[in-house]
Length: 205
Image (cartoon, rainbow, N blue to C red):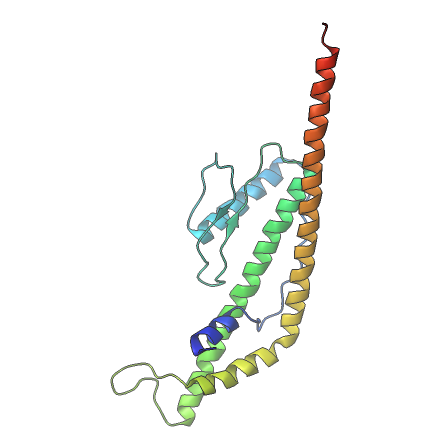
């Protein structure tokens, strides 16, 4: 694994800050306040990603990677006749995306800050300036940076474990909800066909 690859891995590693608490599911009510909240969330994601899908769009939209979290924001499509179960699934997916974005934003900011402090400290210990005679920024060797990477990982192993546990819990719940939505949709289609057949039989000959 080269230095650039290792650096990228740690940008998706652990946060120096606490892991954000699990986000609760939103209310299932269909009030004006909920609609306004949904619109605000969509506007926030549109600002973060730099794009906004048309109101007539029937698909989920995935934007370019965020400059801080390195994650691609998703704007989920809201079906016109969304069922309570579908809404619950969409809310959980949106909140999981937001939770993930916050975690990795904090993580990456902390990692870059501590990495720079490590480089400056090592250069100072060697009696070297930040830049060489040609004005280029000095860097440490792969072996020296590997020491920092291991230190950073060991330091944050507990937070990483907490994050992974919450990540798996959320994905397991999302998978179950997706299965329930799929079964519900199949049942709704079959029920509609049965009603259609029943109406055909009731028609006079």
